[in-house]
Length: 293
Length: 293
Image (cartoon, rainbow over all chains, first blue to last red; front, side, top):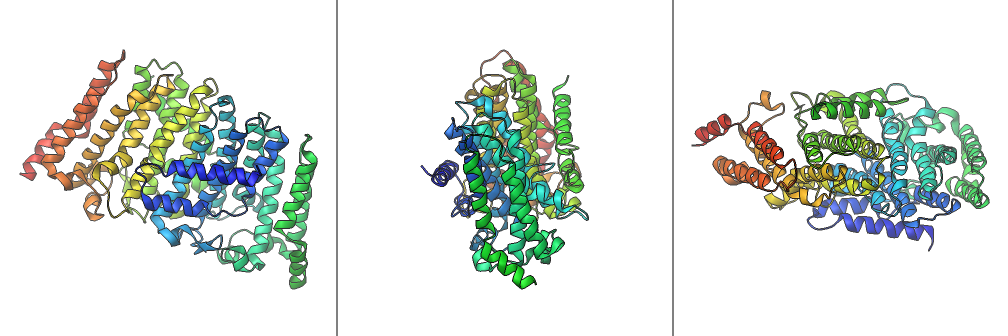
């Protein structure tokens, strides 16, 4: 089965369980709206790619870890879109959760997704419970305090923050959790896989900053120009378009160099290169440079 | 060491870990504001009382379970107080988190506390990882979908809900998680302990409804009259004060009857009776009946 199919099936089963008896119907609707249809499912695919490179001897656990990471990512999008943050009307090309279901249900849907993430992960750990404490530690580090995505979002409200600290927390942390959890779900040590996730997270964030400046909102599926409007730290603002593009290339190179020695190393490196081309297609980087010149 | 001291120490250690390197300082402040100083710490004390009744052979795990439940309770208070729900200016006798730190940090503090709960629990499970999957399942059921406190809060926005379904989710579910997790942390089966938690949760909710109608806001530490103002389901509104008081007594009786046979059964029953007197002191129930007459 293709990794993306495993992920979608696992997410569908997690949501079906959550929508059990006596679930408030509009809460179930809001949660489903937040998860389906998904975006590129980049983080869970990365998690499964690393699990595969490490042998993937507990596939139910690795796909649960991948799903947990995606559920947490969806939760963060729902809360980041709230009126008190971006007040984004659209996400993934349609109404954001609070535009479709109202603010109270958006708050609760995000909360429910965070809980569901840990529930989904641990429900798959019955046959390998000794792997669960480290997996939860890794995933919680990716989302919580002091350096996870919640911290990244909180930095947006602080008077001073370095771009690196902000982007590491806002994006790098969950990517690092994805690579490390992929290894840990397969019984391997997570630590050697942190750097790959961090570099990929930073490159993804820089690509996002670039697209926020120049992309067609129809293509992006969410409003553009938000970083400048909300005075958020942004690589495009700090280094200019050309500098940000160079930074992106350097980060992708660092990610490729950071793939630990393992049987699946070559295919993982190829996957990173393909992902880079998907994030910032050559044609678009040429166009960005032309416009910026 | 007294149970309350164990709980406060465990919470303090969890927060100290969360406030590690590179934590946004105002996020750390908001999370600390949400947890300290605490309220009565009813749920974690209940969790430890059940663990003690079951032998408490992994005290680091039982106090971590108790702390996780309290962190989740604090998270729910922070989010329930948000402008899109109660917009409560005060909580536990001082400013609510969003009044003290603003709405963005209140959203993020709640999110961080949910993550920290699962992180704290699993960090204590290294010596008994086989107990962790069931513990997480229990605690997630208490807070998430379909019947945990998030669902309870979501019912407030649905056009129709039975008082029982609402109160079971809003309050009963986390009390049931507290009793079951106490047993599971000590290596016992959680299921026989569910009823005790559910009855206690319902009685606690009825007591809360009564206090919302009549209590001095200075004593309560939060605004009164919110149930009626927000048209929330309430036992006091549905059955009147006398009916609600009778219901409270019946629920406490059912809780006492539901204590499973175990060495510590007698002291647990005495604790439930004491808790009932703390929740609705005889002097106050007499006064409520006099005013309602």
